[in-house]
Length: 461
Image 1: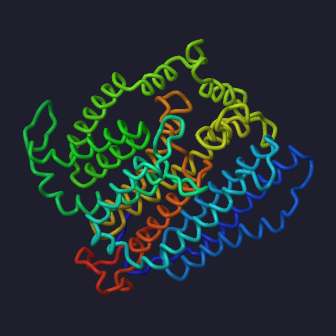
Image 2: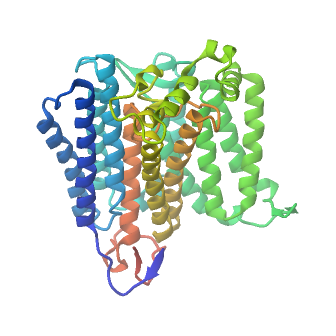
Image 3: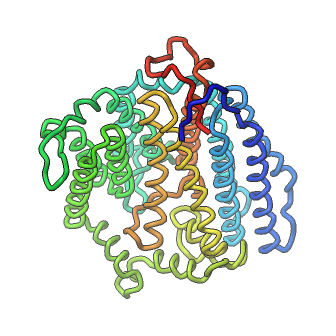
């Protein structure tokens, strides 16, 4: 909630530091608990690992203290806790599989986590004003288009389990679509700020909804066609849903017209139905969703059935970290890390994790409400919604609310490209929140300033 105040808001960096130390403490406690449950001993090198985690967390905090002192004090502790819990679960699955340190996925995830935090800190260090990104609106659109096309290029494109969404460079693989969602949010925000007046013009009223003029339907049709193209050529249902949903929601935020939501839902339903009729892999996922325990479904994949049984075995309070059998479910460390937590932490622990995501999204939307410029409002709303939609798609898929899509849970799931993208996303939200909470008198008035800033002091508490 925004309130007018003559007193500058507190930076709350000390509050952030306390929350950050609490998050690190929870991660360390969970890590020790896993080792005691599996090996009946305190993990070797615990002190070194704790110091390394503290250096990363406190280092990022110091960057915020000196470069974005008014940034939201809750986002960094939440991201650190989620990332740390993901590391703990991946390490727990490594122990169950008997992987050596060199082969362990937890080791690679830790390296990607460190790299992601450093890159996110670099974003905060060099990007002093988010409004600079508006200058590169159409450049961002072109870059996003290239990133989405990269997996289709011969030689570097990789097809993994039917989806061609990876590129390979030597021994390394990367998912460019994760970065594309951030670049697309920048493009959508810049484009909609320029065109929202035309898109908000009244059209015909049908069944109580005021629909836009036919000539204004172009943007949403382009986004729809692009998302269908991703589904057709890359067979990636999750990314196409995320791209289209991101644009529709940002369009609604820019115009405040419910008719755009109605049009988006209609186009999505039509596209999903056509995809079901044409593509066999979509039909397979729908059949697995409708009846995962049927003989025909189990003959194709028992992943969904095992994930459901694992969460059922966890019950209300879970089996305890290190005492369940989440490793029986395929891809328990990536696509199915939510059922892994559900089994060992139970419904209570899983709800606690989901509440962390709710808080992260809420802080992003609060930033969108508090920031003074239209571009920042749309960008913060788009970034926050992309996290919310991705969480809904993943959790909905593993709990049979919707068919599985193949997306990974932000911060928790194994995967370097996902970590890089989501830490950079948080860095952008922190930069925007710094502008939102900073008094007008302290805002930079250099070439990056815009005419969007109001004359009164607005403090976002």
